[in-house]
Image (cartoon, rainbow, N blue to C red):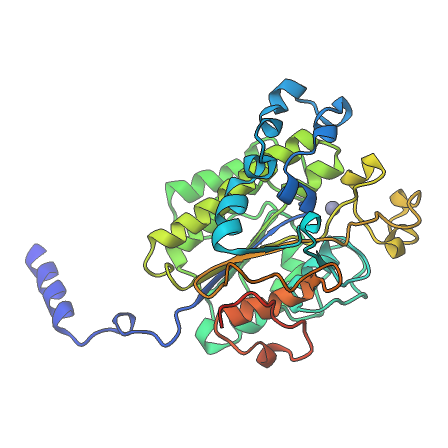
Length: 380
Ligand SMILES: [Zn+2]
């Protein structure tokens, strides 16, 4: 038996190189990450001392949260990978304290319209609720999956259970694992435990699972399927904020930063990914800043005057919640780019899809020439 096995190995090694051995025309890969409703204020300033010291927003005692305030660089304390690694080797747009600007262009400033804008490259103001209604628009993920080169190598993971509708899994046939869906795969102890635990651990939200499961399922898929394009939508940060739990928002932001570091470390450790993978990270909307309690919310004037009755005490909307940020790192990303985006010339969420396609070495206009142009963040 062993001899036959060895003979097969020898024969295989003598046979002409398989397709996998031949240099591929284009091995570019993409990881797109979204962090739901993470404000630019936390990303660039770190924990807000005023919110940390307000017991209304924190079940944890202030002492437990003081590590978030200690360091001179609070941003690096909260999100060290974003601040130090992406901030140095990649590009981050949207630090309004430094005059850098990014915003959504949709009329609503909440999640489904935001993800639709990010993934399709343009706002569709008919998408005016967060209900899990199949998206009539085609995302760049669906388009990629329809291209020979990328067919069956695009995967999406989300903590929020609306993602199968946002990416229209019924029509796109993309594998979208979201909410509390188990992940199909070859039976393994790891997958078994993850699938069981995500339903068994106490979870605070009905429609959003813990990001740790979304993350581990994504990592499992990275290892076992070698996708060309992976979309990971973390969600907890938004839900904890809506609940007014600033302590949990901070813990969650810190965890998500660690998750993103793990993804990037895995990329660097794998020759299939290393050197030709771009990671793009962004958010679907901002949140308020004033009055003080507005940090919990986000909505445009159009939304608070209509659809979002619970926020109708804010007739001007949650001011500033159209402010977002976007970041990128990869072999063709120019760390000194991104300066073109000022308060007078904001980057927009509608540019993320074309940026992603350009990072993959594709002509974004083949997807849709009417979408936002790629961000000016590339070396060439
Ligand atoms: Zn929200």
